[in-house]
Image (cartoon, rainbow, N blue to C red; front, side, top):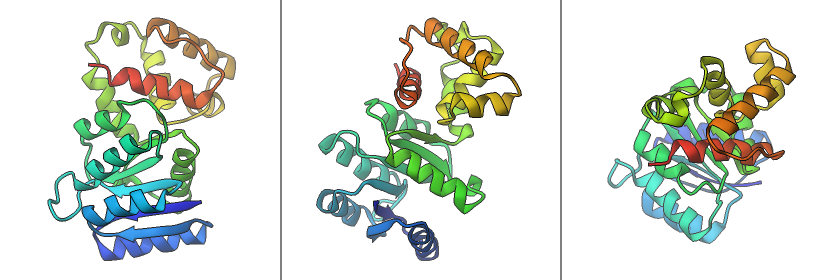
Length: 215
């Protein structure tokens, strides 16, 4: 699996390279600025991009803007964003097209290699890997929207875990309930949000995330 990595801090970039290679990934390019990232994404056609939000020269949203432009040129390009903070505008823009393969992790909340590698693989496969804090803020922003307001507290918990990319089995284990109960909550959520049920877990989660981005 080929990865384009963008991180301007040398020690962190080098550590990410070593970690990814140790788990069998091929580093197609590792860059430290926006122009080089844009070039690498266009030329290398990676299986997944791991991108810091803030890159030189602007040190604002350079990294994410490059990733978004690449996704417009190649719809569905898997992108895992790394950030120090929850940037709601960036998260919403990343999720807006609903084509899948998106992730948003907070750097100081990635606690081990397995967690990070699982997120990269999940995003590369077309799924989602969203930090709970990101999901919480997106949900909070929409808390006054009428469809979301119809959800029960338990359904909201299930929705947040779905948005993290967890399966029904994982949600059941987290909430200490049966998978049948989770399936019922999931069905209720789709009904209340006017989203048709699907057997495809990735598309199910992406539909929820796309809903959260609706204006």
